[in-house]
Length: 462
Image 1 (cartoon, rainbow, N blue to C red):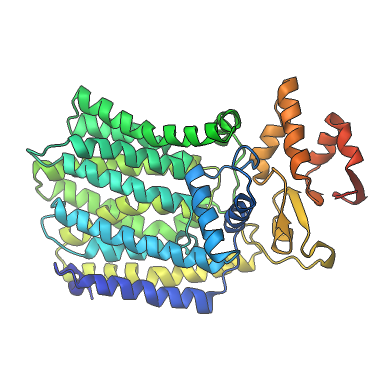
Image 2 (cartoon, rainbow, N blue to C red):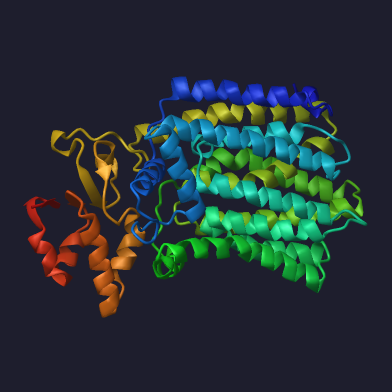
C-alpha cells in the first residue's frame, strides 16, 4: 500500500477517493455521531437568511459573511438536512487533497514526485469526524491553500509574478470573508512574499489591493442593504467575545500525538540529513511559518472545536511526507504508514464515541417537549437543543457574542436600534437560560407589554 501511493501515477487518486468513500460509509452508517452545536448553528443561520434577514444587521453571529451566504444556498437546495453538510464537506476535502498533491508535484517540492501527500492529508482529515463536515474553517482554508500555491509559484526562478501576486491577495481576502480569524494569515502572506519570495514594493501593494478587494465588495453589499454600520460594530467584537470550549486541547493532543511526532521527525531529517534546492528551502520556510500562524489561529479561535484544525492539514501533510521520503528503512516507513492511514482513523473514531457517551455539551441531543414543537423561538444560552423542535427567530444566534453586544454601553441611537431589532422579529418564545433577557426587560420596559414569564426562564409572546 505504501509503495502504491509512493509512485507518481495520477491513477493513485482513485485509491485516495476509495479511502474517502469507505470511511464515509463507515461514519454515516455505523458511527451515529449526533448533530453538533456548531452544525445546528450554521443550519439555523441558513434558514434565517432564507427568511429575508441579513447577518449582523438582523442576526448576531460570528460566522463570516461569505460562509453565511454558502449556508443560505445549502438551505435553499437541501433544507434542514445535516447530511448535506457531511457530503458537501467531503467533496471539498477531496478537492483540497487532490489540489495540494498536484501543487507538490507541479512545484517540485520533493525530490520525488509522489502521491503520498494526498493519502496522508486524507488520513489526517479523519482524526476527527468534525473535520469532515462543511465548516467556515474548511471553506476559508480552501482559498488559503490556493493562496499558498501561488506563493509556491513565487519560489520558482524567472517567473512572471504579477498575476500570482494579485491572486495571493484575492484568495486571502476571500478566505477572511469565509472565516474572519483567517485575517491572521495576512501577515503570513506579507512576510512570505517579502522575506521568502522577494516581493518588490509594487508586488506588495498589488497583493494588498487584492486582499482588500473582496472585503470591499462585502462592505458594498452591506452598504446597499443599509447594514454597514451594524457590520462594522459587530465584526470587531467577534475577536473579543467569550470562547466556546467544546473540546479540550488534551483531546486533540491524544488523537494527534502520532502524526505530530512524524511531522517533527520529518522536519528534522529533511533539514539536517537531506540536501535541498534553493526553491525547496524557500518552500520549507513557507510551510514552517504557515504552521506557526495556523497554530496561533487554532488557539485564538472562539469556537474551540476540532473543525478548526483543518488549517493545519497542509503543513502537517508536507512534514509527514518529508518523514516518509527521508527515512530509508522500509520496516519503519511501512509500519508508520499503516498506523497513520488505518489505525489512526479507527482510534479517533473510537475516541469520539467515548466523547459522545460522556454527554459532551458539543453534541446536540434532540429535545422532546411537545409545547416547543414547531414554535418560533430565540435561545439566550448555550443549550441549543430546543431548536431541533422549532424554528430560530430573533436576532441573537451566537449567545457569547450577543451577550457582549447586550452588555456594552449604548448611546440613545444604539438603544433604539437594538430595540427595533428585537421588536421587528418578535420571536414567539424566548428561552432565557442565563437571565440576559430579564436584564434586557429592565432597560426596555416596553418589552413587558410583548412578553410574559410563564415558567422558569421562558417568556411567551402575549
